[in-house]
Image (cartoon, rainbow over all chains, first blue to last red; front, side, top):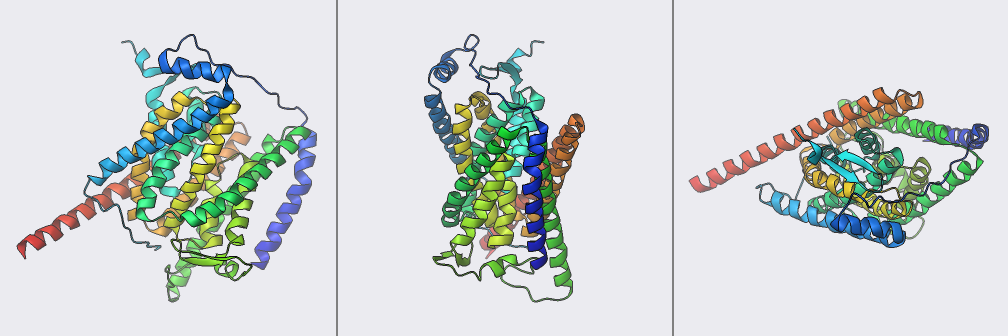
Length: 98
Length: 347
């Protein structure tokens, strides 16, 4: 434990010294790019969400989270329903480390 | 033959993508993530990149997909009793604050200049530490077993650092029933904060760091560490999905296509944990971490193709290994069940 502590301390000190120095040395800064959805080749619901992304990005982000949760839950429960019919015991397990 | 139906147009990235490839990536990462309890960003991102996504879109799309996939795995793991929600919620606090601190640190360093290579090398060091820790823990446990040491509640263990950390008794002390541990609430908070800072700094979900931290520093059994970590990956993934959409780096269509594959894969990976031994999961995890580390080193030296080949073959091999565990285990269980039923009818 003592040895790991000293090792970790040295590593962190090394990083603290190295990181800013390397960053300074590297130069070149990142630039921000604005990305716009191309709505010319999409129709229906895809067009709706692409338009929404172009006009109201915050609403689009909220939709991204809501839809990810909804689809994740939907697929999770559907697969759960199917797996329950496999005949396997899916409610208990033994924890065996070795 | 017209194969255009195999391609989908991604309006934000502006590229046509081979959608069966997306399903396959989703499936493979679902299997691996469900088994190891991690998001698997290091596997998805190069895969998406190979399919034609620009790197920035690959990262964002991958994060949203990870959130959905972790949700599917968490649902299954919670039925096995592998998710310690109390521990998960407490750790989420530390993780969120940690990720934000890590991200701020990166932004501060970015203002000074390009820090990409530095971040990569720090990542390599941590992956190496994790791999060394996992393998030496296994070696130590075997050594102890050979020496005839009496097994504890969890069998013979290699490193038991968590026992020392459990001695810290700064209130509030908490009992985590599912994990079977009693410790200061500050222990999971500080462990999650530290892994969060690292995750934010390295720009990863953090499952790769949190899963071993849960085992070695907090003392959760391997199976519970997997389930609880997935729960956390799900929450941080949703947060990531929100912020990356704001930055315009998510292709939601691709996320949903990948989730269809992940739904099946996550079930296989999660159910496989039932038939795997804790140390089996740890060793396979160590091997995956090692491959991830080598691929990053290769990338650092601009060997992009060998790095991608290594990652894809790692995914393939681990995926097959997990599927074998799952199907063998399931076949045995069904056979035994049948035999029991036959005995009961005879009697």
